[in-house]
Length: 82
Image (cartoon, rainbow, N blue to C red; front, top):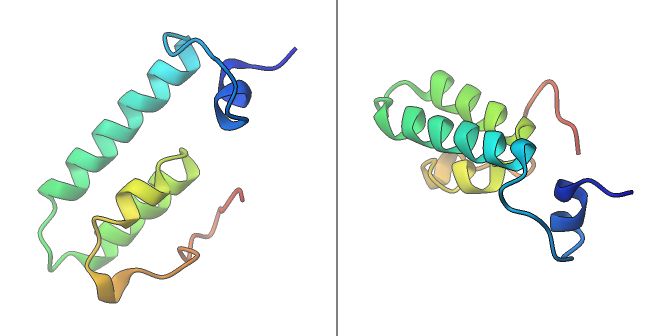
């Protein structure tokens, strides 16, 4: 049987209150908040946050917050999962 995350990614009906999805949203919000709070001059930290976000399934959202010059597709993450 598919997990709720697998259903979501497949475009099927899913339970958004699933514990895994709730935790993923919290991680994504925390990473976005950390990126928004980081100074623009701290580019290494901002790239690390973007890579961490991608590994947690929120990379596209967080990567869009980086300055255009730092947007590299795919993000140069050491532990990419895609």
